[in-house]
Length: 366
Image (cartoon, rainbow, N blue to C red; front, side, top):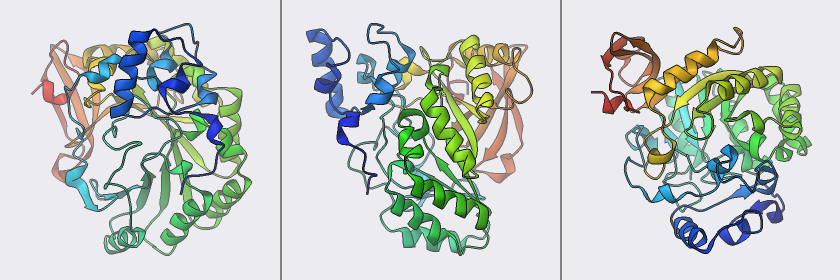
């Protein structure tokens, strides 16, 4: 089911990684233990963007295992995905949106992934019968869009992607389709070399319904000549491209970095959409989360250097109760707003809690 890219394009083990990054015997042993729990996968293209001599390289932090992955604080399902699963591989948390988990594979396995529980591993959470998902969507007329994610759906064979979209075509109450993908960032040639995919996406967006791709650029160095080419091809196919960034310690937790990322995204025609608070995921939380107080300071300072187009993004957390925008701090209180809510009575609701200096998640404030 996975798109056929030369296996030599990937680094799939610590043994492979040693050819690119120098590891001492202790590091090698530690990372091999982590690899047994959560696999490693890095594209050689993305590896070429990393400074092999810099252990603190921000791009390295996102794809190379870290000893802090032994930390078990947090949860593997902090956003309540299990309770929102209606049929295998389909989630329905908010009335208008059906979310499809199309695959457990990605072109590269991000160490901060919030679905770390099944990425690159055997899983019973992935869509196995598309007909059941289609029937559910047909019955629920309130659903006006589908988000196809995973894993990364753009690693699937083009014929599989076409099949997904063609089966969604007759559902009249759907207005648009979204794909969540990091492929334009970590394996851009999968986009610009596949003319059949681009042609199909163009025809579908023009003649059936609008397609959006939500990319996942986290650092300005990820915007390269190659990734620009992939983005341009998608735009020429009529795709609207938005970007979701995760605020990550050691990666982009500086206002200058965040501002540069947003400016550069707008310059290539990508709309800044969300900056997400890193979720308190097991084997992620300890080394990637940024305190909310610091996160707000970074975001607001970055916005001072951005024009209207570049600062349209919202700083949010995907909480089990909904998509919560983090608004600001005043008089020792931190203020929030539900942009989306599982309980519809909360949608649009403003609320506040007492600020705690090192709190990184809503549950740590209440």
